[in-house]
Length: 114
Length: 111
Image (cartoon, each protein chain N blue to C red):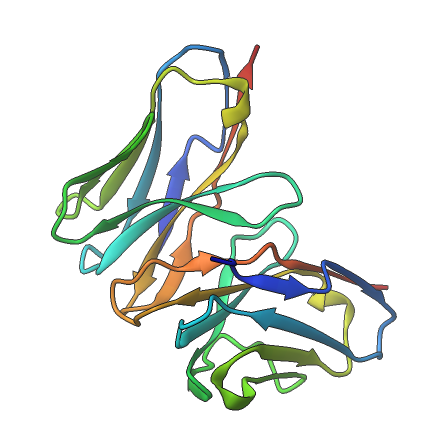
């Protein structure tokens, strides 16, 4: 069974540009999460999808971030326009259920904004 | 507000030692607790998931315990090996799914 995959693995962009990160969850997992770790800090929750619906986007830092999950399969996270403080590692995770369910994480996308 | 703390922040031990990593959390009303391992430049690998009704889980040389009332979990690694070198993270959900992570313990096992 394939795990959670993320693309790209690394992205280097200039301030003001747009970047789109993609996550493919484990097949059959309705729950998809985005997290990120900025330099020197702990990993923090960004948002949660159940199928194609956003259940909780309380962790999204501001309106420069837009997440979608069309058709309830893969998800994208767009940052537009990117700022220096957006640099970090963006992780995607998926789980079969919402409550008490093991979350499986992808390898992450390392984003560097210059 | 849930907060997660991991002690020690870093640990260096000779190969073969048994060791204990600690995780504490402030809100004991948790659904579960999950331990992860992260290798440099890699993603998070799930090691063990302990449900709130359980007291411990074992996988190979790893044993994780959970004491909800005291807000603590320990990850015990038996007979450590150089391949165990990584950062170990614990996470608890705030509510049912929003994981709160500790800052991790960086483990180095010397050959």
